[in-house]
Length: 103
Image 1 (cartoon, rainbow, N blue to C red):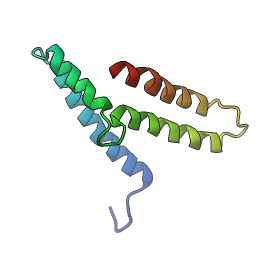
Image 2 (image 1 turned 90 degrees about the vertical axis):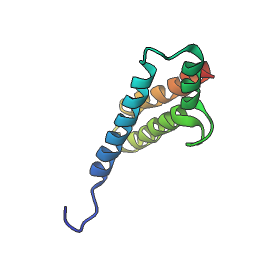
Image 3 (image 1 turned 30 degrees about the vertical axis):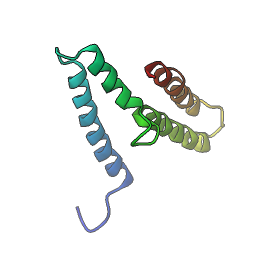
């Protein structure tokens, strides 16, 4: 790469790669034969803890979807919600159902 900074898409692609590796590690740990009830609860608790990031991983994921939905609203040609509505719904499902059930 030249002296130019990486493009937004390249930064996102790299971040997604890092996140994918981290999620794969969590999935591997959850799938281990020796994970008991207490350890499973602790692992799931880490996904919703109000520490780093604030609100936990699940809330951060919902916030990411909400930001994407808000951007989609701004660029939808007829503002009919075709692009943004599914993103808003996914964010709501994650926070309303998944996070609360984990707690």
